[in-house]
Length: 371
Image (cartoon, rainbow, N blue to C red; front, top):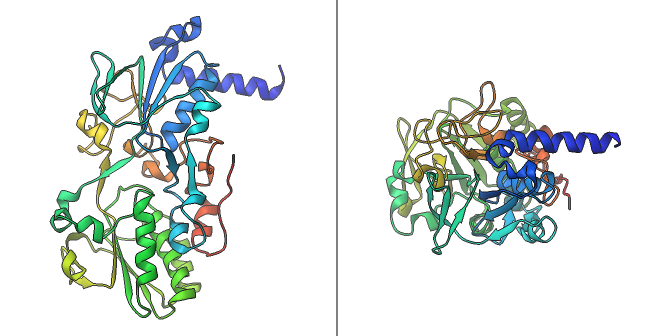
């Protein structure tokens, strides 16, 4: 056995053990196979599905439940807004998880979880049995905190684009349609939220587009937080050096409502702000699958986990990955650190890395990709 094989074997054994398969799925070591259901095909879920199959040498049956046919990288979707990437560039079908790794792909949504029977119920009516369950559904939004956004049609007009896909393209079209000389306002929620540097990267990408196509326009950042939540010095330097006069930053602006009809943002303490273009990033919590199962045990928003195994603190046999988790001690919000190193899609090691933040402040640098 060479050094690479030794490391690979050791890594496989440690991860399978950490997820509890040696204890919870005794058949893994015995060779008969165990069943793992993974809910959510983002960075965490798709990577877990792939490597559990690889590291168990195919002995563990893995089913990935994901309603979409392809993965769209949310972490680099701001490059689509800036115009240096298309949505196709950041989209990868899930097909290879099945063809190369034997993951069973189920395009459906989860309607419920029976943790006593160890079953996942699907919207289509089927039920999937599991020995271990991995939940990685990402985030969902707390629209109830912004009453105006809960009115019919409001979320189609004032976009968040914090889940990559159709809203990413729609927001890009709104930017293209804006007349030169107008203001594009980005509202940032109180931390924690998915990917703390993301809104500031977005401001840079939009400013880069304005610099080329609409030089008299302006990006206004209205941040509920006291200051930039991630890499403040880096972003402020970029705003001062590269986008001087294009980006204005206003902290301590907690949003309380949106008047969609007049494109007006309403704040707790500050004056209303009206802008030609609005991008409202709403408050967030764990995905619906997690909250409806009663697993959002930290402030009814996030999940408490054992950081060695990622097993939920109060649900045996259920592991939580990605944005749903409560922040680890001495670490920032979950989405600020990579959940995997999978090779079937854009490298998550670039996700939220120093290189990524620097690239987000420029208009020409793009992330590395892998097959």
